[in-house]
Image (cartoon, rainbow, N blue to C red; front, side, top):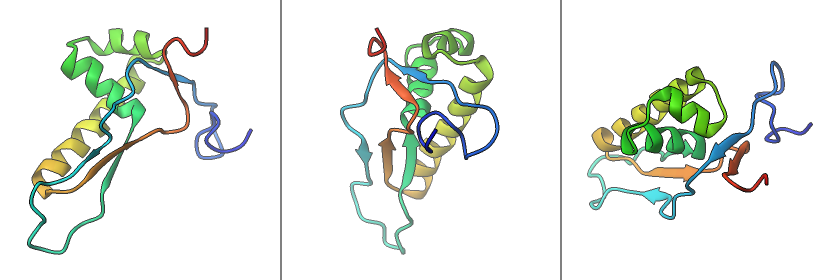
Length: 113
């Protein structure tokens, strides 16, 4: 199976398809004022990370409930959530762009029916 079609980095266990309930309409965030210093490269967040952040922090679900909605384990939600929170913090503290992109293994909820 080619890269980006459900496999990780070419080795190891096959990655599960993640169910995404909300595709963000706004996918690019940037500082209102250009930085005075040398700009840093943008931060990229996957739909999976965005969905974990949305379900747990915005909708108030537990990580277990979010995992059930996404079709993954609680541990996978924890990893995605930790990564997403770090990226949002970096964006705010460092004044960097944040771009939300598909990660290759997300499926909008209802698309598999």
